[in-house]
Image (tube, rainbow, N blue to C red; front, side, top):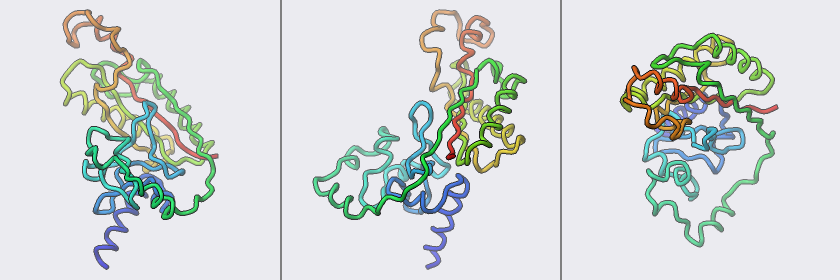
Length: 244
């Protein structure tokens, strides 16, 4: 009984940190690990929330083991979210699995359709090279975002930071996390609840410049042409999820 209560408290704490209700988090699309911790952000539809790049949002409880576990015989959510992590044999349903799932699935509960508004802040209005300090133009755009979030029943704000490719992977990962944290801090200062803002850093993994900045010379922060060309990669992307 003590262990079961501890599991329930861990689940409740994880859901509270993401602004989720118990009824939403225990729908069939929820995946938990053996300790009852929720590894993915779940929206009001009981569906794993995804970024503008269609990537699943992980919580602090995410581990490869958590991504591979399921409830009620369903396939792990990690089969779609983390295909490179979940073993392939866990992502194949048997012929009897659909029928079993249909029998065990609870009747769907009507819920208000979520309203998702994506705001992509201009990179040159947010951060200079090798910096995680918001510029005045970036603050103006965040002011507008905070105002718009008051027009919906806010569930969660997803903020993901990015960097250009100059520098080491480790350094850029930390820098992208600092940029996302800077956005969160500013939104909280404007009245947004801290537990509604979920941040993540992607480092240099998702550039938007593509091949546009090749053959511009040495890969260095002192190369002004390269730094200027890579400006769009130094950004934070924000998505607001709520219901009206």
